[in-house]
Image 1 (cartoon, rainbow over the protein chains, first blue to last red):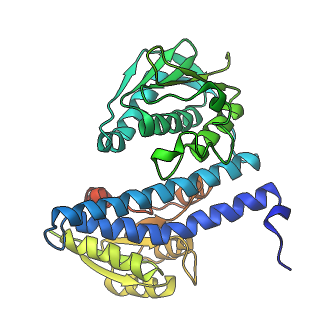
Image 2 (cartoon, each protein chain N blue to C red; image 1 turned 180 degrees about the horizontal axis):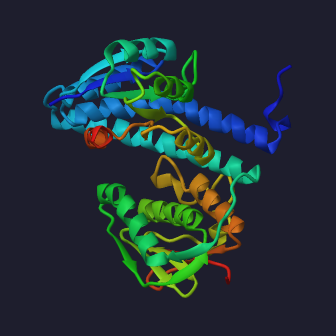
Length: 227
Length: 121
């Protein structure tokens, strides 16, 4: 007897998505790998157009991988499979690490990322890193420049992009996203990523606030709970 | 000096990718599409390194590792897991099996050469 997706329990849905994410890695491995061998020019030289097209194939495959990984993460949160463990976390080092990883994609868009401030907080480093990664990814998509900073017990991710109308801000964290709010400039809108960030923030007992920057743009503030 | 490396992976395209990359790095690659075939080649050739997919059609990659370790002829071969795991729990299970390392799919091909050199050291 087949079961409808809606009838599956949270942990069955989580296992189904983990299985799909596993099975997608085979074809994505081939797409990323062979487009990569061409970009490394292992078989021979490329024309500028060929290089650009291969870069687009590779970027799209990476986006697909990130999307399915985010869906697995949401399913794991819903199934109660992600747990958080507190330990002292050097937020400066964490932000530097997130910035370093985001800089390749940011450089493609001409978006600089800088990091400010310092502080140590008792929290879950892995989950905070994932939240900041998603906020940074979103900021890079829309910002002319991005700043990650530590303020008190919180982390802010600010961009100087077009900004978000206050009425649209509360729609940002809905699971199926603010299509039409900010997603128009990109294939993949902020929908799933910001939803993941919000759910992970709930999990660690934190909150994410959205506001405007003093000179335009958008500021996301992740407030971490008192130890 | 290239190493002799055996790739065990049931996905033919993935197998071709890894053997192509290894050969372009100057290694000598051989390949098997399932666990039993891989074990037979490992016993015959005793390669320097085995890259073994974890989910194979006949026996699990962790079982391939166990049998390589249990046989005196192949016990000394470095064995690295090729993993398509999508969750931390599955990656932890693989890490607990005792492989000499783990390469996650999609492979980071830019660093594969350095990764393989690290496993051979």
